[in-house]
Amino acid sequence: MQYHARMRADLPASVRRLLAELTPADGPQLVYDAAQLDHTMREVAAAARGAQVQALFAVKSFPLPQVLTLAARHLDGFDVASPGELDLVAALAQPHHVLSMADPTTLGTAALAARWPTLALAPPRQLGPGAAPPRCLLSCESPAALAHALDVCPGAEPALRLSSSLTGQDPAVGSVQSGQGHHRSRFGVDAAPGAAELTRAQVTRAVELARARGRALGLHLHASDVTHTSATRWIELAQAHLATLAEAGVAPSFLDLGGGWHGVADLAATWQALRAALPAELPIFVEPGRLLAREAGFAIGWVRAARSLADRELRVLDLSRVCHLRWSQVELVAPPPRPGHGRKVMLTGPTCYEDDVLGEWLVDDAQALTPGEPVVLRGVTGYAAAWNTGFGGLPPAAVRLVPAMPAMPAMPAVPAVRVVE
Ligand SMILES: Cc1ncc(COP(=O)(O)O)c(C=O)c1O
Image: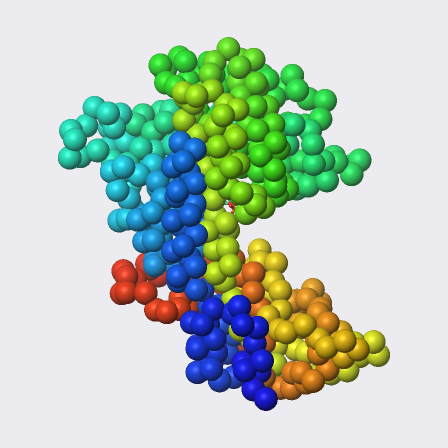
């Protein structure tokens, strides 16, 4: 029996049709269901509208021209993290859009001024109606970055980014290690345990800088540490940030809560609860990324080698976790094994990297998964397409939206490797 004839019925018809047309010669594939993407975009937009929250699409999470066009149509703007991302969406930005820039290198500040010259020349509200550029929020990692942004982009609305470790919870996540097993985020104004004075001093400095130039100050955080799943946790995080600024004697002009919304089951209820818990006049922005690719992403790989280990089967695919499936928690798409017929199968990528493992599943022993057979995985995010690369002779995966969407502008070529002579 053909593998795709045994696929689970909940595989979208468009992906199933594509699978029937492909052969092993087509190589690894990242396939996204266009109808599901459109559905999720609309759902997120409606949830945001219902809570008076503005949803900006995190460009890095899925930088395909078709996806960016969908986001421009349905959402309130874009979140970008580099000058390169700014270029990807410059032509799509509408006057009613908001553009948020959170660039940890500060290179983006200068790029913003160069690409949106109007921002550098005059605050948007002073421009004529036809010439209004999108509103631009500029998130700064430190008082020094803020000082630079205030000077270079007088038309942008600056925000101070505070560390998402501010609440002191979730101590086991983040890349700054203190040597006692405590980790914290390296982004934004530092929130080292026991160094609250230092954090406060930095916030006060930022408030003074903005005040001295007669500029309002927004707040930005991105919960990069853990995936928050409840409204209570989001509210706690937001209130901790607002309280930190309140100590310095000001209320923020806006609160940007960044991304990381994919763990929330009921987005509309969560955003409404957040809206109700925070000051009614406070503009709230969110920057969802991987949430928008929910249930839409699939990967297809082909079995290249089959081996039996002492305690499990091993299948080497041409699909690699490190090259093709970054930031994706994938699941095998296959019917469950019949009672007594399950056997452990470990699926790996073809690279020499020991950790290039896609996962291990209990698979029916009638599924031989012999070389040449396809394997389908679900739970693929847009980040997989964004990181997608080759390694050691292995090609990048082909990236497809199915059914194909109407012709869209081609994405500017970004060289994968820059050779410096
Ligand atoms: C500042 C910022 N906003 C939004 C996002 C999107 O996050 P997610 O894809 O988890 O929603 C990221 C991701 O790294 C980010 O750094």
